[in-house]
Length: 191
Figure (cartoon, rainbow, N blue to C red):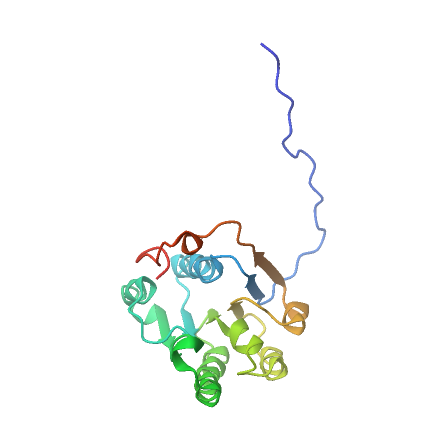
């Protein structure tokens, strides 16, 4: 029998000095999983006993699995769904701008609440992409956040200036999606 080649990484560059800081994390791209990954991070924070708050832009009044799950954590995990639904449902730019503004006010409250360890601004990248909110306004507020506050921004089309200030950026790439095959969104998978 032929011996297999060892392809595992065996070398690791060690960083001499580490620093601690609250991170700005961005999940963007056209692939599925941006919000889902943020929920995974929320679960990690909750498992450590930290408080998490999320503002959902765009998603509207859907009854989602994540909102139901969050209820099981009581006030340790709060979700504020402030969107009016998808833009093809609202068909009203001025209304979308007003709704995004209300959601952003809630984000600022969460951002500066010292009890919240992780703030998730779900779908905010789309809101900036669609010109409902100005990225410069978001960046100015993020620069004033408490030093150890972690902030997760999700949604496709993250503006370059958001990517520039982020500590971690992940781009989700769609290779294949059930919707392209005529399969509708599934409860427990997409919502």
